[in-house]
Image (cartoon, rainbow, N blue to C red; front, side, top):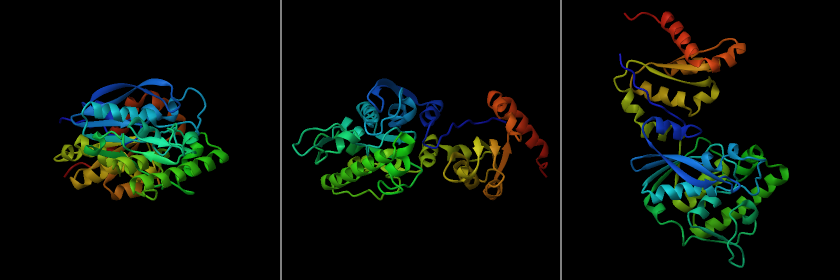
Length: 340
């Protein structure tokens, strides 16, 4: 029996790699990290679609030194978007996990032609420090190709831009912000939102997901008409997962740990839903499996298989994953009822 391999991701880390494994073409771009250091980033191109991970340019893990939340910008991500537009992409998919930034997307927008101005109409640096002096926004230079493009932001959180559940309060501390920084960043984002509304007549601060990635999705939605979508859904649609499941005898998926998060928009839950719609049984292999989620997954047509029962085996299982997977699936096959 032939097997069909469909690499998947949920819009976060590994999304570009999944598309490259599915046959997309890599595009290498000279860009900068969140603090302006030069680097080369790669995105994927599949027909008219460009798949970009902001973390490859503006990611926290890229920084050589300590994070600087008041200076970090998404400018490098904007350079990736500009490159994709210059190469003729008509559809942009942007994964926004792992960011080092809380600039409301101002850096990316600056790379795409937006000017952020102080009271004397001098151009400001699009960092939070620069935006603290923001008085107006000039959109005359915004890349006109954005208006003709479809932009989808892969986002699986529903945080608003501002407030106790917003970008600065929830995600700022993860990016090196202390209490004073969080208050400063909140004030900058509030100023940016007010001035952006005056410039665009759009007030999207309460949009679910506006606070993700330091407000990048909010910025692109406000100035470029981007849509925030569930990451797995857009990836599965583009790689044709539903079609691959039609007529399949069995679907096998998995992740490092199957737990409560697996039920909330991640790959396992998304695959299970599409497989159930196609009438296909799903096996989910996890390095470990939370027994509290197994009953819920079972109601969704998923049988969970854990690679390890003893936490002491974790490191060995990571080193020898293929052998552990073969052993676990063999156990499942022996225990599976014989077909009638």
